[in-house]
Amino acid sequence: MAQQVLFDIQKSDKCGRYATASKNLAEGETIFSEIPFAFGPKTDSPVVCLGCCTPTDGSILCSSCQWPVCGPECEQIPAHKQQECKIFSKEGVKFQSVSDPTDICPQIECITPLRVLLTLETNSERWNKEVEMMESHSEERKTKPVWEFNQINVVNFLRGPCKLDRFDEDLIHKVCGILDVNAFEARTQSGYSIRCLYPKLAILNHNCVSNITHSIESTGVGDENDFRVNVRANVAVKKGEELCSSYTYSLWPTIVRREFLKESKYFECCCKRCTDPTELETHMSSLKCNKCDNGLITSINPLDDSAIWKCSHCTFTTPSEAVRKVFAKIQSEIDEVEYLEGGQAIEHREQLCRKYKSVLHPRNAYNVILRVALSQLYGKIDGYSLEDLPDLLLERKMEMCKLVLQVADVIEPGCSRLRGLTLYELHVPLILLAKNQYAAGEIDKDGLRKKLNEAIEVLEKSVKILSLEPPGTTEGTLGQMANQNLTQLKENLEIMIETADQY
Ligand SMILES: C[S@@+](CC[C@H](N)C(=O)[O-])C[C@H]1O[C@@H](n2cnc3c(N)ncnc32)[C@H](O)[C@@H]1O
View 1: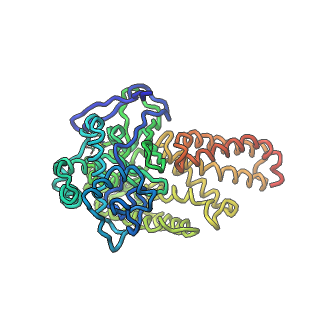
View 2: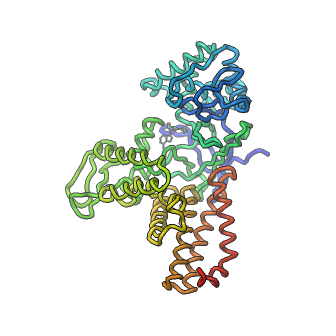
View 3: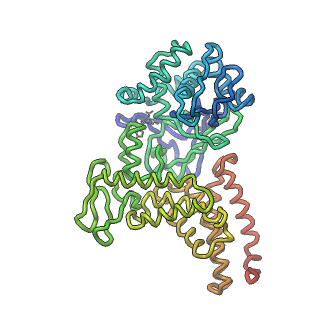
């Protein structure tokens, strides 16, 4: 059955094509779903299997084309077998072994553009209707190092050794641009990151507070539904309102988001969140002033990257460059703790929270990033399992979830994954603290019932959001588990209260 189209395509001189809702959309309503025009390794990729895109050391090669794969099964994956494998085999273009396979491998750079070009030929109707007009920013890119990089690694390689001179240079550069400007990141079943080109999803312009969520599901077998994307409304959207996605990490502060958008998507974001020095009262960019009491340092004009930052209470000012350096330093310290395991994953993040307590507003972006991670780690790590957590740490987990939700309600409102996951994390300490408070005689059975009902309400909200996620994804699986927890909690509520004295 043909899909109902729930958006209209509009055009503006400033932003090109954009999408508006063609009817009132309810929170959580599916807007459309589509399969990628092409998918494959991201730019700057290390050596990966050309079947499943998992990083490999390049020692196992496809028996037909002699390019890296994981083994015979991956050779057969259509994205590889029916595309670059045919070209490389026909022209005898072999993969050159590399000394460090974890390093960026320029030979992989041509794969995804080549898949787009080959799909252009096998599905010219879709190319003409949906892809050909996509934004590539070729003119701006001509002046950047990326142009020369692509000239060598993609254009010359495809037109030379691969003998694909039926694709002219401009077209190949345009395809590279279309991918860089429009492709979305997806995860393979083994968790590796790839890029997918979704022509409908890419019509949506960017806003730092998006009103849609997209979920991508991998079947893992390379069939025609692999990496299908589902796009739904996060919040209720009125007919005629613009539908916007977010091209950046929504938890970054304004100066970092705008720089990323300018560098990689070639536009200056002027959305409401970027325009407001307080980031819609979240204070995700705000710093504490150490020269006075209670002063907050914010940019005097966030749309001007070089504008000074000024204290709200005293005369202190600092250049934007200094703030950028502080943010970059904190980000690099967060990156360092990213891969820690066990108790260290919690302890090092807590150290960072303490280190920057006097510098960052409590809801500054980096505090929120640390708290999102901590709210999910407490209760799941040896030494910090739920049974091990004293009330003090249960309360900390609860407070962190509440802080993240306060921010998420503004920057990722409605049924966003961030809200769904954080509400799930919140219900756990709510239940455990209620039980402990009853055991300590701080609340009676009515108080216990009230608190457990609050936890049920929180879990219900989480289930409502996470059940919108495709079943094969991590969030979808969590949604199913949350739903089972909810059913059990509701069924056992009265027994839990009756037997509370035995805890
Ligand atoms: C994924 S495309 C979006 C669709 C695009 N407008 C088109 O006509 O194909 C991304 C490009 O759209 C433009 N764009 C998207 N969001 C924008 C925004 N908030 N302000 C200005 N330009 C924007 C930029 O040129 C950006 O590189």
